[in-house]
Length: 195
Ligand SMILES: [Mg+2]
Ligand SMILES: [Zn+2]
Image (tube, rainbow, N blue to C red):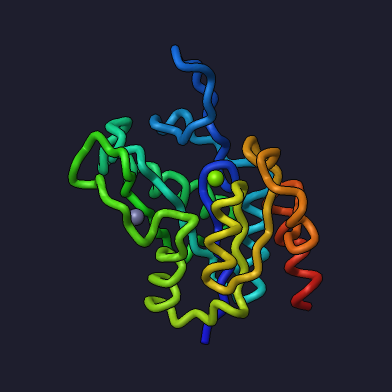
């Protein structure tokens, strides 16, 4: 069986994009290639995951198409862009899984209550099936509590990295959850645990 480090995308690998809206400010996914900025230390972190022999797999909610904010072609281009930027740093992403659904989608093809939108664990289960992954010996790193819930539901060890949403996290659960500043420090923690 393989082991994996599952990686959330936005806010973990690439920076979130700040947008000022009539309804207030929000942090969102990039919807232009020029908005995609890889976070410092991410290439090194993924190199270390590769070196440990773990699969590096992105599992990400991407409701931008469902919400009419981008199209599938952009999402594919963004994925290729991120993978190639990381490859330039000798960091290899083994696979990418997106949930495209949203319960309030304007695009009705994606307006369903699915089993793959985190905090549900469907993306991790699908990846585990495709890549023969032992989830109980794998990790999930994310910047939102929904990432942590998905990890727990799948039986993975969860690491929460600092992000715009981390403040909403229920500190009463903090004894059960590992916090790190960013992806590189999360992976350095895994490295210590595994070597
Ligand atoms: Mg995120
Ligand atoms: Zn889904």
